[in-house]
Length: 195
Image (cartoon, rainbow, N blue to C red):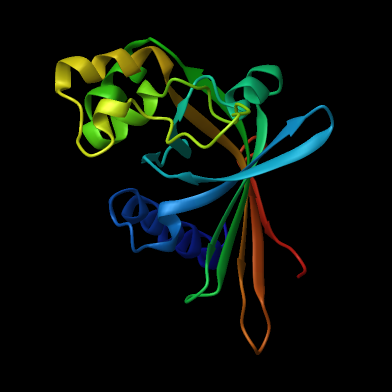
């Protein structure tokens, strides 16, 4: 692999690792694209975990959500990160594995804050049509977090999503010439590409 590509890849993976815990890092959030009846659907996701070899990303979701339904039908998805200050874009193609009520989901759930757990206690599935506005968390927790024992009721709706990265396209925007390359993990190759 070209030395520039190796250094740039390692740098961006370090930013991803930092993005897990650092909410001021632009890589704390990313855009996930799935397919629903031949239409693309996008949404913003919070990055929860990164593994480097092989490259994997993880996020949490309500397993009743449209994205989970879509990933069950077609686990292929696209991912986009962008750092406006550094002018770096990461595009990835991935295959999703859904962890529902297994050891990995239990470990992720055990690390989920009480204030986040109450979202999984929602009476309505995400994107459900409502006759009137509702905060979609239990009324008794509108102004407080649930007790840990009560929060366990949300686990039934919890899903840890693992994204196995098949390819990665990194673009660095420069006024004197952009730099762009692709790493194809499936075919074990990397190369520069035109911008």
